Length: 253
Image (cartoon, rainbow, N blue to C red; front, top):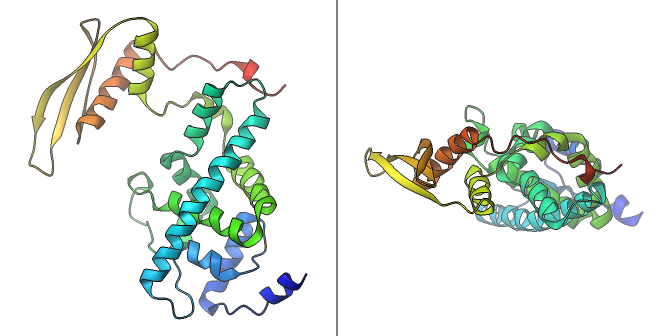
């Protein structure tokens, strides 16, 4: 009660009141210390220098990443009582991947309030929205504690913005999918560079991947890793991998 009362006396910049109202809508919690939430969005408060503001943001992001990982694991543990360790780990990796966190952040409206706007840039080319989401999780944890953070993550983040049926069918890495299949089938595979062109800072690689000596896919990218992933995706499509319907037995009945 006292802490709630004291929150009314926190000094909040007038221009930040709309942001704080939006944060209440995103998280479902009323801030005790609004400045913590402003730090999650890289807003300077009081007499902080930009360096100190950036450091506070990065610390919240670090903490939020750890807290989100634990709460995500707990959520999946309860949601899929028949899921084994490999399945749960795979699902968690998909939901907390940078691409997935960026998507969630966009659905929550986070980019509209970020200090450095991403307007005009493809969200897939920047990790800032997802990083800001992690910082927001860290802010809720520091300000409100574990139980309120759990409600925020489980109800306002995962339940509201993640389609787990779709996530279950997603493939994070086609290269990993291909290698796992090759190893199960006791086959051999090989990546070969077919072409490399461009300047030092604008290289483009084209690679092929063979299974038991037969080329199954080719792909290009700005790095060998990206080209391998593109070639693996083509190979997975040729081999009809990654299209199986997920097992319903893993889900809660």
